[in-house]
Length: 419
Image (cartoon, rainbow, N blue to C red; front, side):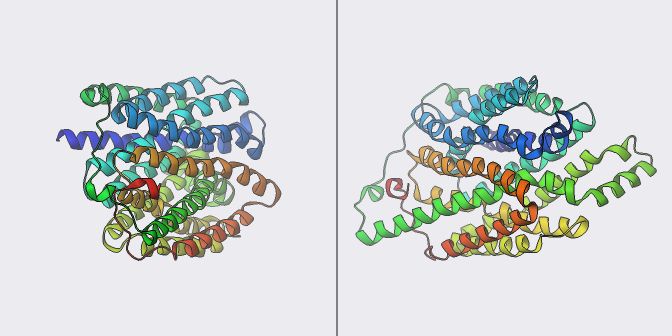
């Protein structure tokens, strides 16, 4: 394996771990702490909210530090820092201590997206497919959080779900630092601005860039709200709506001789969540290929329409029907992830790219944080069916906004206006 391939593998694993760490608590809250600590699901969510605000707010300084110092150095800090924060969280004895641990996890988690994506979009060609591959690893982290955490809840307790990934991340951070030592220990090299990038832009071009930028950040906020609401709440949704099929599966496994399978409901719910997330994440491969061929407008409208339809179908469904509808709307939710990153990567200069991704992820992860109070309020007062209708309306808003994108995206490599 070449040095570049190993580097790309490290970045992909980093994306996997980034989403894994930020969603461990989603399953812990739904399947363990609500019972162990006697707190309601909605009440527990408030302790995760500051962590997701940190996930967003600290993206901008992370991108700035990466551009000013070293992108590879910041990735090393990410691996080691988030691993240590996860280990510390495992020792929490109160909800407040868990909240503090999740906040620190969020601070280090904020590093990956502005820095890792800046490396991917500048270092290699075939941006759409590279982003899609990297995105799939992140999605598998989302999926595995429910599966791994559910397994550890049944076999050792929820604290182990923070300990094991923490140790793995620290080890990977040490290996990454050794592999990329030349880049980690040196300052980031500036990319010269080309003559074309420095040319004055016409009034019509500036107006187009302003329109595209507004659409990018509007759809970033709304799609992030949809994605976070579904990925964070899905373990709880499945805990309520798939109990019948989960019990049947565990009873069947127990009858075939699998040890302790009959009582492993949390593992079964985590497995269903993993299957939906993992299969839906494959949509990014298709989206990545289509972005390089068709451009973002057509692809974005397709994935938005898919979400509108399947969110509207979900209210009232249970067991197999609920599982099928959830797969449908997650297909669209995962498929939309690389589209805005693709547009920023095409239009942003290499020198400022990490900072621009930082701004994009401040918007994105702030919406992530706002999703948690939304889930708590809607679930506590109306139930998940109302949440599904709200998500269908949000997807419809994305569809309308994206229809105003130009059919062909201008490639300028001059980020100041696009940012």
